[in-house]
Length: 291
Image (tube, rainbow, N blue to C red; front, side):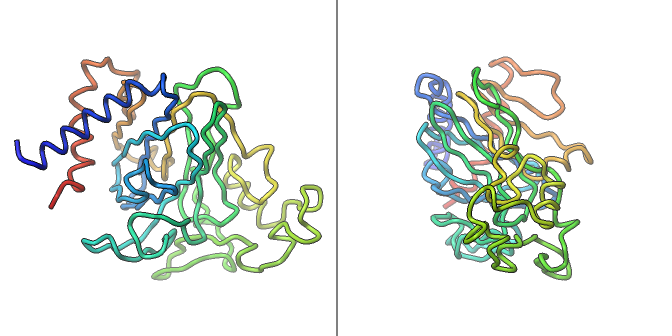
């Protein structure tokens, strides 16, 4: 067994061991899935438990991570990126500087999935800083407690973005800015005289965002329909999930010793998921093992 295969096997065994222990240790399993038609580059901060905070996902690929209770962070997608072998480059949207591995938040506009992991988890998808990709957060295997519903948006705001908010690249709308970002006015930014929930009300622009994404934050005080809670759940963060309905694409994700695939009527038994999991994990880890 060469060095690269040894590292791969060690990572897989470590992953399976941690996954089996997650319930007693209170960890959460995150599955990040790319249903988009093009490659995306998820950014995550803090990224200690998420491959350093940045990686590439081709269409149909998924990546699995384990984060402990106490992690407070955000996940978003970057588009139109080009990185060299040293992980230095640029992105059309969502860039966290020039690095593949994010140590800072993504540049606006970007759709954000936000998490606070505790005895009762809080999570949401926010369009307050604008929109660049459809993102949904789906809790799975939750214990009783909390409003454990899916958050986010599988609609594509780029298709209906007002011209004054649109970010263009090659004549295509690649993102939709927030009204606060564009106009820098108190009314849109919920500050000054508009700095309280009673005074900061939905605007024409935030209503447009809310119509497209009913389960996402459309402005700063859009709490009642936009923040969700869950107890002991794992989370699937999906990009462009609506597009899976338009084409046959099988994507497998992993939750508590179970492999679940799109189009499957149920969950497979441990004997059935082990080999696919190893093969899937190997395909995800292999690029990082190349010298």
